[in-house]
Length: 191
Image (cartoon, rainbow, N blue to C red; front, side):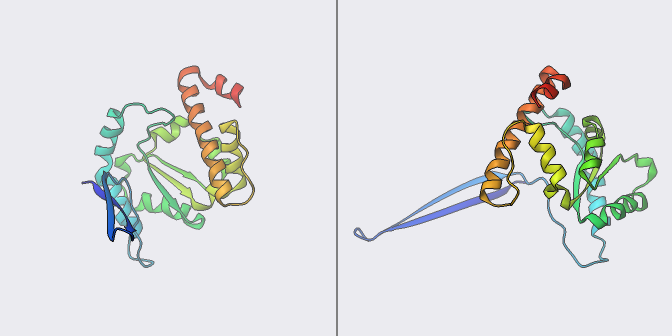
């Protein structure tokens, strides 16, 4: 079921003694969530159970989904975890999920791990485990900067960084479309 997002704004027109209120609502389909609890309460096992329960539906949904400009449809569940838990997550998958299920797991702890992956490996994965510090690492940021082929990212976080990141990600989306239509050689030429 959809989650209804609501925005309310109000203003007072003192000379007239009026109060105006504007309200907008839109349904949003939530894909994902956060499971937070104490250490040892089974968060990983619960998450894996949810992933397993939804696996068949997600595969159907991704298979039926149309291609979207600048995006690649992926069926994997993304698990962003503290860096020291990436190996534990991989071992917990082996512990709680039967080998017969045939889960394909990709673990990414560094930008180097990411560079070794092909798009096909990510598209075929059922679970992608990523160390949370990857997204702020210099190697990762340099990679998306190069792939985006345009704007440079500043060294420090903040509003300017976020604005430049938006430009870089627009460039990445264009490269995804170029990859689809013109192939990998055209992407490399653009870089």
